[in-house]
Image (cartoon, rainbow, N blue to C red):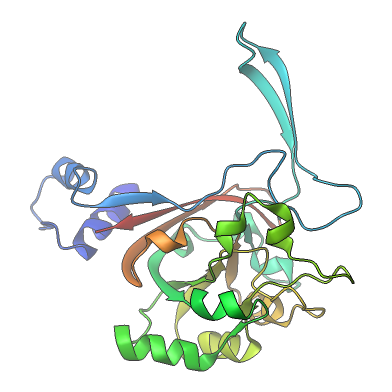
Length: 264
């Protein structure tokens, strides 16, 4: 399965794939500089932004045994499933849908389509990505590829190290950050063949949402979400290929995920 996937990635980037080629050569080409691998994952620590709670940051990391330097030999950690760069499995907002461990391996690989609306979000933090934004993207780059993972870049990841700016709460403790519109969600689910979506802030639903309609639309269609995605600004609008590797929690509604982008 791994060999087939990496062969497919190499073929996608047209860097010398032939049926008779040596598999080791294909691996070598992938990591020889002809393709870059970009990490789209924030590190987890005690200062990572978290969904506001009176209890404070829920992430815990405790060193059980240490080297003389203080570096961990063994440590224990605890965290909610939906913390840091993470996946919302379909079950998260739709009863009867797949848990994170039930997702098929093939669901976790796909071409990235990056929709950059950061300029709009800079002037309007409550901006909702619209169907028209997606159609404008397609006018420039072509129809969204089958099996795409659509990443919305709002520019919010620049605020990751500033918790107050990241959650952007007003005097009534309402958060203000961009998200997908329900119209865009219905378009992607009903008119395009995508695997999932992702965003570079807390939630695919914008900060003022109270009903989390976009969660319900995508999860209800058996799709997953990626939230708090890092380094989306380093990706091209089209041409990258994503490797999505969530922690495999039995019955999990989601979990921390390491996301890699292979870029030609």
